[in-house]
Length: 427
Length: 180
Image 1 (cartoon, rainbow over the protein chains, first blue to last red):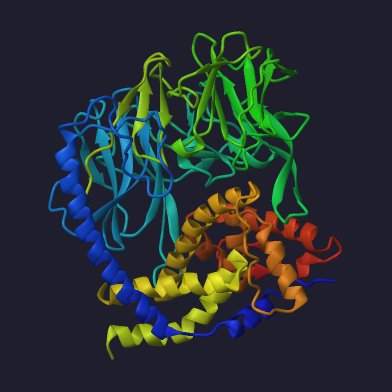
Image 2: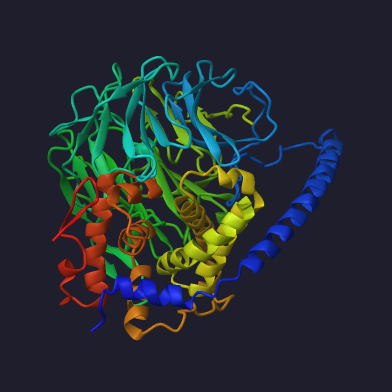
Protein backbone atom coordinates (compact mmCIF):
# COMPACT_ATOMS: atom_id res chain seq x y z
CA UNK A 1 0.00 0.00 0.00
CA UNK A 2 1.49 3.34 -0.94
CA UNK A 3 2.34 5.64 1.91
CA UNK A 4 2.12 9.41 2.07
CA UNK A 5 5.74 9.68 3.06
CA UNK A 6 6.42 13.31 2.24
CA UNK A 7 9.60 13.38 4.33
CA UNK A 8 11.02 10.32 2.60
CA UNK A 9 10.10 11.69 -0.79
CA UNK A 10 11.86 14.93 0.12
CA UNK A 11 15.03 13.09 1.17
CA UNK A 12 15.07 10.92 -1.95
CA UNK A 13 14.44 13.79 -4.34
CA UNK A 14 17.16 15.88 -2.70
CA UNK A 15 19.59 12.97 -2.87
CA UNK A 16 18.88 12.53 -6.57
CA UNK A 17 19.82 16.13 -7.31
CA UNK A 18 23.26 16.60 -8.87
CA UNK A 19 24.39 20.16 -8.14
CA UNK A 20 25.98 21.93 -11.08
CA UNK A 21 26.66 25.56 -10.33
CA UNK A 22 28.97 25.78 -13.34
CA UNK A 23 25.92 25.18 -15.52
CA UNK A 24 24.17 28.09 -13.81
CA UNK A 25 27.14 30.31 -14.70
CA UNK A 26 27.07 29.09 -18.32
CA UNK A 27 23.39 29.89 -18.62
CA UNK A 28 23.95 33.39 -17.25
CA UNK A 29 26.59 34.00 -19.93
CA UNK A 30 24.28 32.63 -22.65
CA UNK A 31 21.43 34.77 -21.35
CA UNK A 32 23.55 37.93 -21.56
CA UNK A 33 24.65 37.13 -25.10
CA UNK A 34 21.05 36.39 -26.16
CA UNK A 35 19.76 39.61 -24.66
CA UNK A 36 22.40 41.65 -26.39
CA UNK A 37 21.43 40.06 -29.70
CA UNK A 38 17.73 40.58 -28.97
CA UNK A 39 18.22 44.28 -28.33
CA UNK A 40 19.91 44.62 -31.72
CA UNK A 41 17.18 42.66 -33.49
CA UNK A 42 14.45 44.66 -31.75
CA UNK A 43 16.03 47.89 -32.92
CA UNK A 44 16.12 46.56 -36.49
CA UNK A 45 12.49 45.42 -36.22
CA UNK A 46 11.37 48.83 -34.96
CA UNK A 47 13.06 50.51 -37.88
CA UNK A 48 11.38 48.09 -40.29
CA UNK A 49 7.97 48.56 -38.62
CA UNK A 50 8.29 52.33 -38.76
CA UNK A 51 9.04 52.08 -42.45
CA UNK A 52 5.93 50.02 -43.20
CA UNK A 53 3.35 51.84 -41.04
CA UNK A 54 2.82 54.54 -43.62
CA UNK A 55 2.17 51.97 -46.35
CA UNK A 56 -0.29 49.70 -44.54
CA UNK A 57 -3.96 49.80 -45.50
CA UNK A 58 -7.05 47.97 -44.28
CA UNK A 59 -7.30 46.32 -40.87
CA UNK A 60 -4.82 47.41 -38.21
CA UNK A 61 -2.40 44.78 -36.95
CA UNK A 62 -3.48 42.51 -34.13
CA UNK A 63 -1.06 43.38 -31.41
CA UNK A 64 -1.72 44.11 -27.78
CA UNK A 65 0.46 44.68 -24.77
CA UNK A 66 0.37 42.23 -21.92
CA UNK A 67 0.14 39.12 -24.06
CA UNK A 68 3.36 37.29 -23.42
CA UNK A 69 2.23 33.74 -24.04
CA UNK A 70 -1.11 33.52 -25.76
CA UNK A 71 -2.04 35.24 -29.00
CA UNK A 72 -4.78 37.81 -28.75
CA UNK A 73 -8.28 37.37 -30.11
CA UNK A 74 -8.40 38.08 -33.80
CA UNK A 75 -11.19 40.59 -33.40
CA UNK A 76 -9.41 42.85 -30.92
CA UNK A 77 -7.94 45.81 -32.77
CA UNK A 78 -4.60 47.33 -32.05
CA UNK A 79 -5.21 49.94 -29.34
CA UNK A 80 -4.54 53.55 -30.03
CA UNK A 81 -2.29 55.70 -27.91
CA UNK A 82 -3.63 56.95 -24.61
CA UNK A 83 -2.48 59.48 -22.08
CA UNK A 84 0.52 58.62 -20.03
CA UNK A 85 -0.43 57.57 -16.51
CA UNK A 86 3.06 57.16 -15.27
CA UNK A 87 5.13 60.31 -15.07
CA UNK A 88 8.84 60.20 -14.53
CA UNK A 89 11.73 58.48 -16.23
CA UNK A 90 11.06 55.07 -17.76
CA UNK A 91 14.58 53.75 -17.81
CA UNK A 92 14.82 50.54 -15.83
CA UNK A 93 11.10 50.44 -15.08
CA UNK A 94 8.60 47.83 -16.12
CA UNK A 95 4.87 47.64 -15.54
CA UNK A 96 2.88 44.51 -14.73
CA UNK A 97 -0.82 45.03 -15.11
CA UNK A 98 -3.93 43.28 -13.90
CA UNK A 99 -7.42 43.42 -15.41
CA UNK A 100 -9.09 46.76 -16.07
CA UNK A 101 -12.15 47.38 -13.90
CA UNK A 102 -15.28 49.43 -14.55
CA UNK A 103 -16.62 51.93 -11.98
CA UNK A 104 -19.20 52.90 -14.56
CA UNK A 105 -18.95 53.53 -18.29
CA UNK A 106 -16.72 56.58 -17.78
CA UNK A 107 -14.62 55.52 -14.82
CA UNK A 108 -12.13 52.70 -15.28
CA UNK A 109 -9.33 51.45 -13.09
CA UNK A 110 -6.22 49.40 -13.70
CA UNK A 111 -4.19 47.60 -11.05
CA UNK A 112 -0.50 47.64 -11.86
CA UNK A 113 2.95 47.13 -10.39
CA UNK A 114 5.62 49.75 -11.02
CA UNK A 115 8.80 47.67 -10.95
CA UNK A 116 12.49 48.31 -10.96
CA UNK A 117 13.69 44.79 -11.55
CA UNK A 118 12.03 42.66 -8.89
CA UNK A 119 11.29 45.64 -6.65
CA UNK A 120 7.71 46.75 -7.21
CA UNK A 121 5.37 49.44 -5.94
CA UNK A 122 1.60 48.89 -5.90
CA UNK A 123 -0.33 51.28 -8.12
CA UNK A 124 -3.82 51.96 -9.42
CA UNK A 125 -4.37 53.94 -12.61
CA UNK A 126 -7.71 55.71 -12.95
CA UNK A 127 -9.57 57.40 -15.76
CA UNK A 128 -12.80 59.40 -15.51
CA UNK A 129 -13.14 59.99 -19.26
CA UNK A 130 -13.17 56.52 -20.81
CA UNK A 131 -9.44 56.24 -21.07
CA UNK A 132 -8.65 59.58 -22.70
CA UNK A 133 -6.61 60.68 -19.71
CA UNK A 134 -5.28 58.68 -16.79
CA UNK A 135 -3.97 59.44 -13.33
CA UNK A 136 -2.06 56.96 -11.25
CA UNK A 137 -1.93 56.56 -7.49
CA UNK A 138 0.22 54.47 -5.17
CA UNK A 139 -1.43 52.24 -2.62
CA UNK A 140 -0.30 52.64 1.00
CA UNK A 141 1.36 49.23 1.03
CA UNK A 142 4.97 48.10 1.51
CA UNK A 143 6.89 47.46 -1.67
CA UNK A 144 6.48 44.00 -3.17
CA UNK A 145 3.11 43.38 -1.60
CA UNK A 146 0.57 41.48 -3.68
CA UNK A 147 -2.91 42.86 -4.21
CA UNK A 148 -6.08 42.54 -6.20
CA UNK A 149 -8.67 45.25 -6.75
CA UNK A 150 -12.40 45.30 -7.44
CA UNK A 151 -14.63 48.25 -8.21
CA UNK A 152 -17.72 48.42 -6.05
CA UNK A 153 -19.03 51.73 -7.39
CA UNK A 154 -18.23 54.64 -9.67
CA UNK A 155 -15.33 55.75 -7.50
CA UNK A 156 -15.36 53.04 -4.85
CA UNK A 157 -12.59 50.48 -4.93
CA UNK A 158 -11.69 47.66 -2.58
CA UNK A 159 -8.30 45.97 -2.54
CA UNK A 160 -7.19 42.75 -0.87
CA UNK A 161 -3.48 42.72 -0.07
CA UNK A 162 -0.87 40.42 1.37
CA UNK A 163 2.78 40.99 2.18
CA UNK A 164 5.61 39.68 4.30
CA UNK A 165 7.65 36.51 4.29
CA UNK A 166 6.68 35.16 7.68
CA UNK A 167 10.22 35.24 9.04
CA UNK A 168 11.94 38.61 8.82
CA UNK A 169 8.71 40.36 7.89
CA UNK A 170 5.52 38.97 9.47
CA UNK A 171 2.80 37.95 7.05
CA UNK A 172 0.02 40.47 6.91
CA UNK A 173 -3.10 40.48 4.81
CA UNK A 174 -6.12 42.71 4.80
CA UNK A 175 -8.36 45.02 2.89
CA UNK A 176 -8.19 48.64 1.76
CA UNK A 177 -10.99 50.80 0.43
CA UNK A 178 -11.06 54.00 -1.55
CA UNK A 179 -14.13 56.12 -2.24
CA UNK A 180 -12.39 58.71 -4.43
CA UNK A 181 -11.21 56.56 -7.29
CA UNK A 182 -7.98 55.31 -5.77
CA UNK A 183 -6.44 58.60 -4.59
CA UNK A 184 -6.82 57.93 -0.87
CA UNK A 185 -7.18 54.57 0.84
CA UNK A 186 -8.27 53.40 4.28
CA UNK A 187 -7.89 50.08 6.03
CA UNK A 188 -11.07 48.04 6.14
CA UNK A 189 -11.85 45.21 8.54
CA UNK A 190 -14.07 42.75 6.70
CA UNK A 191 -17.10 41.42 8.50
CA UNK A 192 -18.95 38.19 7.95
CA UNK A 193 -22.61 38.02 7.11
CA UNK A 194 -25.18 35.32 6.52
CA UNK A 195 -26.14 37.04 3.27
CA UNK A 196 -24.99 39.85 1.02
CA UNK A 197 -26.48 43.08 2.45
CA UNK A 198 -29.05 44.80 0.26
CA UNK A 199 -27.43 47.16 -2.22
CA UNK A 200 -23.94 45.70 -1.79
CA UNK A 201 -22.09 44.24 -4.75
CA UNK A 202 -20.62 40.79 -5.14
CA UNK A 203 -17.06 41.35 -6.37
CA UNK A 204 -15.60 37.83 -6.60
CA UNK A 205 -15.55 38.00 -10.38
CA UNK A 206 -13.00 40.82 -10.28
CA UNK A 207 -10.88 39.36 -7.50
CA UNK A 208 -10.16 36.10 -9.32
CA UNK A 209 -10.27 32.68 -7.73
CA UNK A 210 -8.88 33.76 -4.38
CA UNK A 211 -11.92 33.34 -2.23
CA UNK A 212 -14.23 30.43 -1.64
CA UNK A 213 -16.58 32.79 0.16
CA UNK A 214 -18.86 35.27 -1.53
CA UNK A 215 -17.15 38.66 -1.17
CA UNK A 216 -19.37 41.74 -1.23
CA UNK A 217 -18.58 45.43 -0.92
CA UNK A 218 -20.63 48.51 -0.09
CA UNK A 219 -20.61 50.79 -3.16
CA UNK A 220 -20.78 53.88 -0.94
CA UNK A 221 -18.29 53.16 1.85
CA UNK A 222 -16.13 50.34 0.46
CA UNK A 223 -16.83 48.20 3.51
CA UNK A 224 -16.39 44.47 2.86
CA UNK A 225 -18.25 41.39 4.07
CA UNK A 226 -17.57 37.71 3.47
CA UNK A 227 -20.50 35.30 3.21
CA UNK A 228 -19.12 31.93 4.26
CA UNK A 229 -21.98 29.74 2.98
CA UNK A 230 -20.89 28.48 -0.45
CA UNK A 231 -22.68 26.74 -3.28
CA UNK A 232 -21.14 23.43 -2.21
CA UNK A 233 -20.06 22.68 -5.76
CA UNK A 234 -16.62 21.28 -6.50
CA UNK A 235 -14.30 23.42 -8.64
CA UNK A 236 -16.80 26.28 -8.44
CA UNK A 237 -16.83 29.48 -10.49
CA UNK A 238 -19.08 32.43 -9.68
CA UNK A 239 -20.67 33.88 -12.80
CA UNK A 240 -19.76 37.50 -13.47
CA UNK A 241 -22.08 38.26 -16.36
CA UNK A 242 -25.25 38.17 -14.32
CA UNK A 243 -27.03 41.43 -13.50
CA UNK A 244 -27.65 42.56 -9.94
CA UNK A 245 -30.97 41.27 -8.69
CA UNK A 246 -30.78 38.10 -10.80
CA UNK A 247 -29.31 36.04 -7.97
CA UNK A 248 -25.79 34.80 -7.35
CA UNK A 249 -24.98 32.07 -9.86
CA UNK A 250 -22.19 29.53 -9.74
CA UNK A 251 -21.16 26.68 -11.96
CA UNK A 252 -19.12 23.68 -10.90
CA UNK A 253 -19.29 19.97 -10.39
CA UNK A 254 -21.27 17.71 -8.11
CA UNK A 255 -18.15 15.71 -7.26
CA UNK A 256 -14.53 15.12 -8.27
CA UNK A 257 -12.78 11.98 -9.38
CA UNK A 258 -9.39 10.90 -10.64
CA UNK A 259 -9.23 9.59 -14.18
CA UNK A 260 -7.19 6.58 -15.19
CA UNK A 261 -4.92 9.07 -16.92
CA UNK A 262 -4.17 10.57 -13.56
CA UNK A 263 -6.02 13.83 -13.72
CA UNK A 264 -8.50 15.18 -11.21
CA UNK A 265 -11.71 16.05 -13.05
CA UNK A 266 -15.19 17.16 -12.13
CA UNK A 267 -18.19 14.93 -12.53
CA UNK A 268 -21.76 16.06 -12.77
CA UNK A 269 -21.72 19.51 -14.31
CA UNK A 270 -24.00 21.66 -12.25
CA UNK A 271 -25.35 25.12 -11.78
CA UNK A 272 -26.21 26.60 -8.40
CA UNK A 273 -28.11 29.75 -7.55
CA UNK A 274 -28.70 31.69 -4.39
CA UNK A 275 -31.65 34.02 -4.43
CA UNK A 276 -31.15 35.22 -0.86
CA UNK A 277 -27.72 36.77 -1.05
CA UNK A 278 -25.74 33.59 -0.51
CA UNK A 279 -27.62 32.26 2.54
CA UNK A 280 -29.04 29.21 0.75
CA UNK A 281 -28.29 27.59 -2.58
CA UNK A 282 -30.22 25.42 -5.02
CA UNK A 283 -28.47 23.31 -7.60
CA UNK A 284 -29.23 21.43 -10.77
CA UNK A 285 -26.98 18.72 -12.19
CA UNK A 286 -26.95 18.22 -15.94
CA UNK A 287 -26.70 14.90 -17.73
CA UNK A 288 -23.66 14.27 -19.89
CA UNK A 289 -20.09 15.46 -19.58
CA UNK A 290 -20.85 19.13 -20.03
CA UNK A 291 -17.83 21.44 -19.95
CA UNK A 292 -17.05 25.01 -20.85
CA UNK A 293 -13.34 24.14 -21.04
CA UNK A 294 -10.42 24.90 -18.73
CA UNK A 295 -11.95 23.00 -15.78
CA UNK A 296 -15.08 25.15 -15.89
CA UNK A 297 -18.26 23.09 -15.87
CA UNK A 298 -20.42 25.44 -17.90
CA UNK A 299 -21.12 29.11 -18.45
CA UNK A 300 -24.25 30.66 -17.00
CA UNK A 301 -25.97 33.40 -18.97
CA UNK A 302 -29.02 35.42 -18.01
CA UNK A 303 -30.22 38.98 -18.30
CA UNK A 304 -33.05 38.79 -15.82
CA UNK A 305 -32.53 35.76 -13.59
CA UNK A 306 -35.66 34.15 -14.96
CA UNK A 307 -34.65 32.96 -18.44
CA UNK A 308 -31.29 31.35 -17.79
CA UNK A 309 -28.93 29.44 -20.06
CA UNK A 310 -26.28 26.91 -19.11
CA UNK A 311 -23.93 26.60 -22.05
CA UNK A 312 -21.00 24.30 -22.68
CA UNK A 313 -20.05 21.47 -24.92
CA UNK A 314 -20.35 17.71 -24.70
CA UNK A 315 -17.44 16.36 -26.65
CA UNK A 316 -17.20 18.67 -29.63
CA UNK A 317 -20.91 19.58 -29.72
CA UNK A 318 -22.09 22.87 -28.31
CA UNK A 319 -24.97 22.31 -25.91
CA UNK A 320 -27.47 24.87 -24.62
CA UNK A 321 -29.72 24.17 -21.64
CA UNK A 322 -32.47 26.66 -20.89
CA UNK A 323 -34.53 27.38 -17.82
CA UNK A 324 -37.61 29.58 -17.99
CA UNK A 325 -38.19 29.65 -14.24
CA UNK A 326 -34.98 30.94 -12.75
CA UNK A 327 -33.13 27.63 -12.71
CA UNK A 328 -35.76 25.42 -11.04
CA UNK A 329 -36.37 23.31 -14.16
CA UNK A 330 -34.22 22.90 -17.23
CA UNK A 331 -34.64 21.71 -20.80
CA UNK A 332 -32.02 21.13 -23.46
CA UNK A 333 -32.51 23.46 -26.43
CA UNK A 334 -32.29 22.05 -29.94
CA UNK A 335 -29.53 24.33 -31.13
CA UNK A 336 -26.11 22.75 -31.48
CA UNK A 337 -22.99 23.15 -33.58
CA UNK A 338 -19.54 21.55 -33.72
CA UNK A 339 -16.98 23.64 -31.81
CA UNK A 340 -14.15 21.15 -31.33
CA UNK A 341 -12.33 21.49 -28.03
CA UNK A 342 -12.76 25.24 -27.75
CA UNK A 343 -13.64 26.92 -24.47
CA UNK A 344 -17.18 28.25 -24.40
CA UNK A 345 -18.60 31.55 -23.15
CA UNK A 346 -22.14 32.88 -23.30
CA UNK A 347 -24.09 36.00 -22.45
CA UNK A 348 -27.58 37.32 -23.04
CA UNK A 349 -28.11 40.72 -24.64
CA UNK A 350 -30.78 43.06 -23.24
CA UNK A 351 -33.05 42.11 -26.15
CA UNK A 352 -32.84 38.46 -25.15
CA UNK A 353 -30.43 37.35 -27.86
CA UNK A 354 -28.14 34.58 -26.66
CA UNK A 355 -24.53 35.17 -27.72
CA UNK A 356 -22.10 32.24 -27.62
CA UNK A 357 -18.37 32.32 -28.26
CA UNK A 358 -16.28 29.17 -28.70
CA UNK A 359 -12.56 29.75 -28.50
CA UNK A 360 -11.04 32.60 -26.54
CA UNK A 361 -7.81 33.53 -28.26
CA UNK A 362 -6.73 33.87 -31.84
CA UNK A 363 -4.95 30.52 -31.77
CA UNK A 364 -8.30 28.87 -31.03
CA UNK A 365 -9.77 30.39 -34.20
CA UNK A 366 -12.83 31.64 -32.27
CA UNK A 367 -16.35 30.95 -33.47
CA UNK A 368 -19.37 33.00 -32.52
CA UNK A 369 -23.07 32.31 -32.71
CA UNK A 370 -26.26 34.09 -31.80
CA UNK A 371 -29.68 32.69 -31.07
CA UNK A 372 -32.88 34.73 -31.16
CA UNK A 373 -35.13 31.76 -30.37
CA UNK A 374 -33.86 30.83 -26.92
CA UNK A 375 -31.22 28.41 -28.11
CA UNK A 376 -33.39 26.42 -30.52
CA UNK A 377 -31.14 27.46 -33.41
CA UNK A 378 -27.69 29.03 -33.62
CA UNK A 379 -26.56 31.36 -36.36
CA UNK A 380 -22.86 31.94 -37.02
CA UNK A 381 -21.72 35.54 -36.79
CA UNK A 382 -18.36 37.24 -37.05
CA UNK A 383 -16.47 37.08 -33.75
CA UNK A 384 -16.88 40.26 -31.71
CA UNK A 385 -17.21 41.23 -28.07
CA UNK A 386 -20.45 40.36 -26.31
CA UNK A 387 -20.25 36.72 -25.21
CA UNK A 388 -18.72 37.52 -21.83
CA UNK A 389 -20.54 40.78 -21.18
CA UNK A 390 -20.46 41.80 -17.53
CA UNK A 391 -23.23 44.22 -16.54
CA UNK A 392 -21.89 47.29 -14.78
CA UNK A 393 -24.07 47.75 -11.70
CA UNK A 394 -25.78 51.11 -11.60
CA UNK A 395 -24.43 52.14 -14.99
CA UNK A 396 -26.81 50.36 -17.33
CA UNK A 397 -23.99 49.20 -19.55
CA UNK A 398 -21.61 46.33 -20.06
CA UNK A 399 -17.92 45.56 -20.17
CA UNK A 400 -15.97 42.57 -21.39
CA UNK A 401 -12.53 41.77 -20.05
CA UNK A 402 -9.55 41.00 -22.23
CA UNK A 403 -7.24 40.11 -19.37
CA UNK A 404 -4.96 38.11 -19.09
CA UNK A 405 -4.42 38.32 -22.85
CA UNK A 406 -4.51 42.12 -22.80
CA UNK A 407 -5.08 44.91 -20.28
CA UNK A 408 -7.82 46.87 -22.02
CA UNK A 409 -11.55 46.50 -21.70
CA UNK A 410 -14.50 46.44 -24.06
CA UNK A 411 -17.26 48.84 -23.10
CA UNK A 412 -20.83 49.04 -24.34
CA UNK A 413 -23.89 51.05 -23.38
CA UNK A 414 -26.31 48.67 -25.06
CA UNK A 415 -24.56 45.30 -25.17
CA UNK A 416 -24.46 45.44 -28.97
CA UNK A 417 -22.08 48.23 -29.98
CA UNK A 418 -18.67 47.98 -28.33
CA UNK A 419 -15.71 50.30 -28.01
CA UNK A 420 -12.27 49.46 -26.72
CA UNK A 421 -10.83 51.26 -23.70
CA UNK A 422 -7.07 51.18 -24.10
CA UNK A 423 -4.91 50.80 -21.04
CA UNK A 424 -2.74 53.74 -20.03
CA UNK A 425 0.72 54.08 -21.45
CA UNK A 426 2.80 52.58 -18.67
CA UNK A 427 6.56 52.06 -18.48
CA UNK B 1 32.84 37.38 0.10
CA UNK B 2 31.17 38.67 -3.08
CA UNK B 3 27.47 38.35 -3.75
CA UNK B 4 28.30 35.76 -6.40
CA UNK B 5 30.12 33.69 -3.80
CA UNK B 6 27.13 34.04 -1.51
CA UNK B 7 24.84 32.82 -4.28
CA UNK B 8 27.13 29.82 -4.83
CA UNK B 9 26.91 28.95 -1.14
CA UNK B 10 23.17 29.48 -1.19
CA UNK B 11 22.96 27.17 -4.20
CA UNK B 12 24.70 24.39 -2.31
CA UNK B 13 22.38 24.75 0.65
CA UNK B 14 19.07 25.56 -0.97
CA UNK B 15 19.01 24.06 -4.48
CA UNK B 16 18.43 20.45 -3.34
CA UNK B 17 15.46 21.53 -1.23
CA UNK B 18 13.96 23.55 -4.06
CA UNK B 19 14.46 20.71 -6.53
CA UNK B 20 12.64 18.36 -4.20
CA UNK B 21 9.72 20.78 -3.87
CA UNK B 22 9.53 21.51 -7.59
CA UNK B 23 9.77 17.79 -8.37
CA UNK B 24 6.71 17.15 -6.24
CA UNK B 25 4.87 19.91 -8.07
CA UNK B 26 6.01 19.13 -11.62
CA UNK B 27 6.39 15.36 -11.37
CA UNK B 28 9.56 15.36 -13.46
CA UNK B 29 12.89 15.43 -11.65
CA UNK B 30 14.93 16.61 -14.63
CA UNK B 31 12.47 19.39 -15.31
CA UNK B 32 12.54 20.37 -11.64
CA UNK B 33 16.33 20.63 -11.72
CA UNK B 34 16.13 22.73 -14.84
CA UNK B 35 13.58 25.09 -13.31
CA UNK B 36 15.66 25.58 -10.16
CA UNK B 37 18.80 26.13 -12.24
CA UNK B 38 16.92 28.84 -14.13
CA UNK B 39 15.87 30.50 -10.86
CA UNK B 40 19.52 30.70 -9.83
CA UNK B 41 20.43 32.01 -13.28
CA UNK B 42 18.08 34.93 -12.64
CA UNK B 43 19.64 35.54 -9.25
CA UNK B 44 23.16 35.40 -10.64
CA UNK B 45 22.28 37.59 -13.62
CA UNK B 46 21.58 40.45 -11.21
CA UNK B 47 23.64 39.74 -8.13
CA UNK B 48 23.39 43.29 -6.84
CA UNK B 49 19.61 43.23 -6.70
CA UNK B 50 19.52 39.69 -5.40
CA UNK B 51 21.86 40.75 -2.61
CA UNK B 52 19.16 43.10 -1.37
CA UNK B 53 16.51 40.40 -1.20
CA UNK B 54 15.48 39.91 2.39
CA UNK B 55 14.55 36.24 2.19
CA UNK B 56 16.56 34.67 -0.67
CA UNK B 57 15.14 31.15 -0.40
CA UNK B 58 11.57 32.42 -0.54
CA UNK B 59 12.51 34.64 -3.49
CA UNK B 60 14.09 31.72 -5.34
CA UNK B 61 11.10 29.50 -4.60
CA UNK B 62 8.72 32.11 -5.96
CA UNK B 63 10.81 32.57 -9.10
CA UNK B 64 11.04 28.80 -9.61
CA UNK B 65 7.27 28.42 -9.18
CA UNK B 66 6.68 31.16 -11.74
CA UNK B 67 9.05 29.52 -14.20
CA UNK B 68 7.31 26.19 -13.67
CA UNK B 69 3.88 27.76 -14.20
CA UNK B 70 5.04 29.46 -17.37
CA UNK B 71 6.43 26.18 -18.65
CA UNK B 72 3.20 24.45 -17.61
CA UNK B 73 1.23 26.76 -19.89
CA UNK B 74 3.51 25.94 -22.79
CA UNK B 75 3.33 22.26 -21.87
CA UNK B 76 -0.47 22.41 -21.96
CA UNK B 77 -0.25 23.44 -25.59
CA UNK B 78 2.23 20.65 -26.19
CA UNK B 79 -0.07 18.08 -24.60
CA UNK B 80 -2.94 19.32 -26.75
CA UNK B 81 -0.79 18.63 -29.81
CA UNK B 82 0.20 15.27 -28.41
CA UNK B 83 -3.43 14.29 -27.94
CA UNK B 84 -4.07 15.12 -31.55
CA UNK B 85 -1.55 12.42 -32.45
CA UNK B 86 0.99 14.79 -33.91
CA UNK B 87 3.47 14.39 -31.08
CA UNK B 88 4.52 11.67 -28.71
CA UNK B 89 5.26 13.17 -25.30
CA UNK B 90 8.23 11.73 -23.50
CA UNK B 91 7.71 10.00 -20.23
CA UNK B 92 8.60 12.09 -17.23
CA UNK B 93 11.69 11.24 -15.22
CA UNK B 94 11.15 10.06 -11.66
CA UNK B 95 14.75 10.12 -10.41
CA UNK B 96 14.87 6.41 -9.59
CA UNK B 97 12.59 6.69 -6.58
CA UNK B 98 10.92 3.88 -4.71
CA UNK B 99 7.53 2.72 -5.99
CA UNK B 100 5.77 4.36 -3.04
CA UNK B 101 7.42 7.68 -3.72
CA UNK B 102 6.66 7.42 -7.42
CA UNK B 103 3.03 6.69 -6.51
CA UNK B 104 2.96 9.70 -4.21
CA UNK B 105 4.40 12.00 -6.88
CA UNK B 106 1.94 10.60 -9.40
CA UNK B 107 -0.93 11.22 -6.99
CA UNK B 108 0.25 14.77 -6.47
CA UNK B 109 0.14 15.34 -10.22
CA UNK B 110 -3.55 14.45 -10.17
CA UNK B 111 -4.35 17.40 -7.94
CA UNK B 112 -5.22 20.75 -9.47
CA UNK B 113 -2.08 22.87 -9.57
CA UNK B 114 -3.10 25.27 -6.76
CA UNK B 115 -3.82 22.36 -4.42
CA UNK B 116 -0.61 20.61 -5.40
CA UNK B 117 1.46 23.70 -4.71
CA UNK B 118 -0.22 24.16 -1.35
CA UNK B 119 0.46 20.56 -0.34
CA UNK B 120 4.09 20.72 -1.41
CA UNK B 121 4.82 24.02 0.29
CA UNK B 122 3.08 22.89 3.47
CA UNK B 123 4.34 19.31 3.71
CA UNK B 124 7.66 19.30 1.90
CA UNK B 125 8.86 22.90 2.18
CA UNK B 126 7.42 22.79 5.71
CA UNK B 127 6.10 26.31 5.51
CA UNK B 128 3.38 27.48 7.90
CA UNK B 129 0.01 28.14 6.31
CA UNK B 130 0.47 31.89 6.38
CA UNK B 131 3.69 31.55 4.39
CA UNK B 132 2.03 29.17 1.93
CA UNK B 133 -0.69 31.77 1.46
CA UNK B 134 1.93 34.45 0.88
CA UNK B 135 3.85 32.33 -1.60
CA UNK B 136 0.73 31.46 -3.58
CA UNK B 137 -0.87 34.88 -3.36
CA UNK B 138 -4.09 33.62 -1.85
CA UNK B 139 -5.84 33.83 1.49
CA UNK B 140 -5.04 31.64 4.48
CA UNK B 141 -8.58 30.29 4.26
CA UNK B 142 -8.03 29.29 0.64
CA UNK B 143 -4.88 27.39 1.60
CA UNK B 144 -6.76 25.50 4.30
CA UNK B 145 -9.49 24.64 1.83
CA UNK B 146 -6.95 23.43 -0.71
CA UNK B 147 -5.24 21.23 1.90
CA UNK B 148 -8.53 19.68 2.93
CA UNK B 149 -9.51 19.04 -0.68
CA UNK B 150 -6.09 17.63 -1.42
CA UNK B 151 -6.46 15.25 1.51
CA UNK B 152 -9.63 13.85 -0.01
CA UNK B 153 -8.14 13.66 -3.49
CA UNK B 154 -4.94 11.96 -2.36
CA UNK B 155 -6.98 9.46 -0.41
CA UNK B 156 -8.91 8.61 -3.53
CA UNK B 157 -5.80 8.43 -5.66
CA UNK B 158 -3.65 6.29 -3.41
CA UNK B 159 -5.75 4.15 -1.18
CA UNK B 160 -9.08 4.82 0.41
CA UNK B 161 -7.99 2.98 3.53
CA UNK B 162 -4.98 5.18 4.20
CA UNK B 163 -5.61 7.13 7.36
CA UNK B 164 -4.50 10.49 6.12
CA UNK B 165 -5.20 12.20 9.38
CA UNK B 166 -1.96 10.72 10.61
CA UNK B 167 -0.10 12.58 7.90
CA UNK B 168 -2.16 15.66 7.17
CA UNK B 169 -3.30 18.00 9.91
CA UNK B 170 -6.81 17.73 11.22
CA UNK B 171 -6.90 21.46 11.70
CA UNK B 172 -4.55 24.27 10.89
CA UNK B 173 -4.63 27.47 12.86
CA UNK B 174 -3.88 30.97 11.59
CA UNK B 175 -0.24 30.73 12.51
CA UNK B 176 0.11 27.51 10.62
CA UNK B 177 0.87 25.37 13.68
CA UNK B 178 -0.30 21.84 13.18
CA UNK B 179 -2.62 20.10 15.59
CA UNK B 180 -3.02 16.38 15.92
